[in-house]
Image 1 (cartoon, helix red, strand yellow):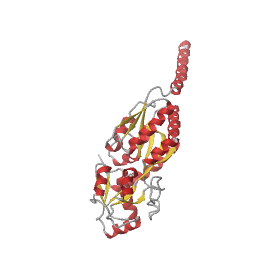
Image 2 (image 1 turned 135 degrees about the vertical axis):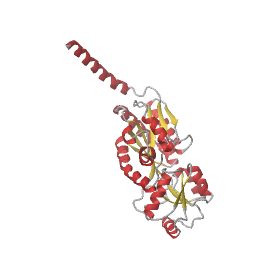
Image 3 (image 1 turned 90 degrees about the vertical axis):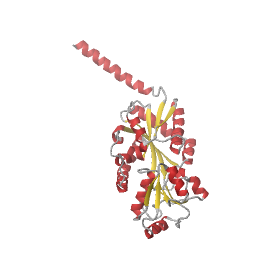
Image 4 (image 1 turned 30 degrees about the horizontal axis):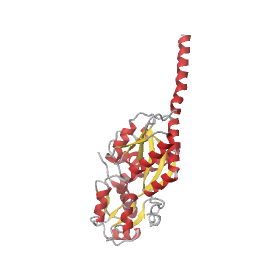
Length: 323
């Protein structure tokens, strides 16, 4: 019995010694970064830009895997069920990591339980824009117009529960106005109808409408974030424009399956934060409207925690719930 116990202890000790060695060798093969967005869009560019630099720093390729659909749930569920070995990561956002838990009646993953934060990438402002025919050049003028014409102004979004929808719902509530939500299947169709004057107001992500703002096809009144965005520094915030405390942003960060070893998470954190601090990467992300934060695991975890009650309240306010 003593001999068996001694052999068992030696075996356990050898295993414990071996496990850190495996983690220290990480990564030994390509890393997959799962995106909830189709190829070609701003989030896809964001993921590929970070993945390329992180791969260079780690000496391994980052493979981008696009799994769009269901408001980010398809990608998130896939990543949540992946092996917790550091080889499958998720580019998460406010929908997949926070809002969907309140928006959908049933999810096949629990973002608070199934993921470990790695790094906070940054935020992206949504822009309050109006068709040029709308006789309002400021937020206060738009609010006054809406109060004088309850239920007669429409705001377009890329679909129920997305940031452009919930930005509009929060704006309605804080301003005390009645504007009618019109949901589209994506930001593209919503923007096209705004350009055509079929709807009057929208709150799209900044990158999707920068060109239209600069060409004068739409008028930008404010950004939804607490601070002005680098891509449109002259556009005031909603908070500056008469609704103090207004703060809602599209945001991005990278997470891994929850049981991923801590030393692998630390390696990924160091690598991704270093990639985000690279001047060329920051410049590329700024051009697509991302205000880079480059936050740590702890900072991203704290940010998610702070965002959860806010998005839960906004979803409840919107009255939207999806199967």
